[in-house]
Image 1 (cartoon, rainbow, N blue to C red):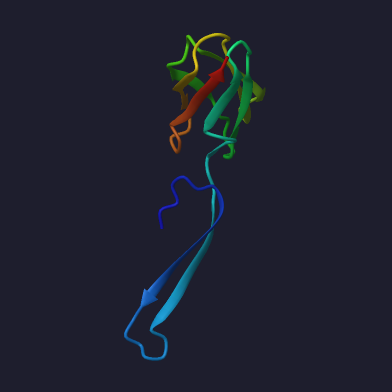
Image 2 (image 1 turned 60 degrees about the vertical axis):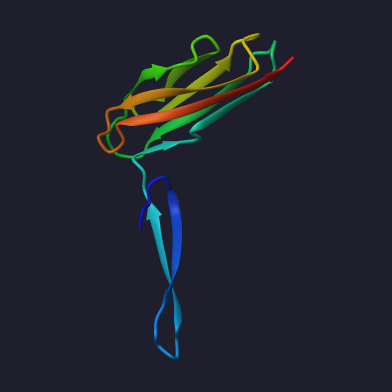
Length: 135
């Protein structure tokens, strides 16, 4: 079972067809708990509002392993439209990334903030940013 992209409790099922006359179809169910090394509150930040306003959204990144987490930016392609600030809330355990739109910079845009981590289990985190603004 491929658990990539999942976090937490998981249930998967599959129907098995056979030539058994009594039970020609049987459903197999699998249950599990997928543990991730790094939990991200959301991987898509959606900034929406009036073109003249500054809109802010915060995402949380937390360490789920017993070793300290370190993150650092390696790519950001919305410098002219959005600012971001990384705050370490709890040393090695919890970070917040605050995204703020810059006023009067266009109607629609999409970009990425890519972060490097010190976890070999999850060496990079990608955060997608979308903006939609009207006059």
